[in-house]
Image (cartoon, rainbow, N blue to C red; front, side):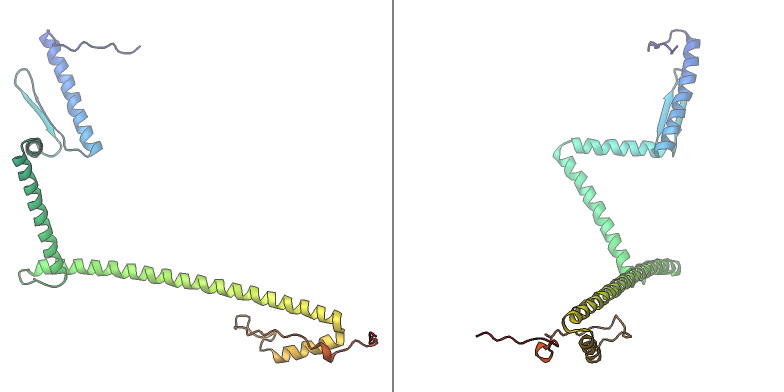
Length: 237
């Protein structure tokens, strides 16, 4: 059975009122602490009892919380106020950005080795460490790019090697088909003679590297030099 709703009103009994205040005060401070830890929030709680006793909690410091609250409230008032207050707000923002830009430009000049006369030894050592870290990062990035380029070249080389092997297989298959066709047309002896002549005249042999570039030239067989034995010449009248 769930708890019934409690009527929110002032407790008349002083003892009950004090007990309820103590319990709920502790619960409120506990919730504030949990909120600050879980949500990384800056929390400040101020409680005055009916006897004017102070209870407070702040995860940073109550002073910084109050100062931040006053500044945020002032900024909101300026934004919602008259145009002159809005102009002042943007003037402060512009001055802040201008100051940040000057700091960045000053640091950049120091990184480039300029305006170092006002720095002491410790500041120069810190600047040197920053430059070494930056240089290390540049070198790591450069090495990474070079490794990726080498891997890409190796991939292309392997792909080209595989293509050459496939082309060599297709060429050998075409040769075999041509030889079989030549045997059917001119006989085995003439086909063997043509095969020997073709192998001696071509720059590609069986023992050659299949990756060597090929220079192929096709020519029509000289049919008039060969005659099938036992054939009869016919003349039409």
